[in-house]
Image 1 (cartoon, rainbow, N blue to C red):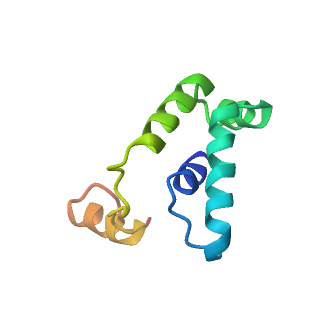
Image 2: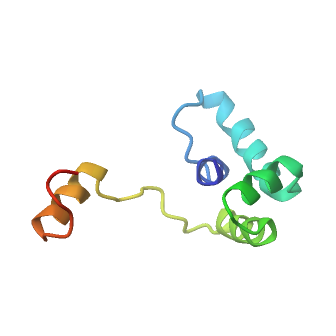
Image 3: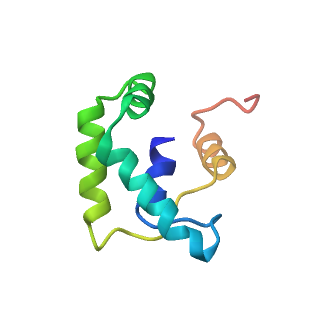
Length: 92
């Protein structure tokens, strides 16, 4: 949930209608900025310090050079590469 909301706060909102994007973005920023009890509960459940998450998220949101695309391997591709290297048994 934290990462999803960080994507929303940074403007990476694929699911919202064009007119809704700014409202979703502002709501996400407010979630980090206000750090209410829901925010603290989510951080606690994730084993993270709410103050550190809040400060880091707000710092990232303010960066104008925040990358817009995330390049990662899919879980299947990563698993195949790991198997090729012999680190994971083929039965997994």
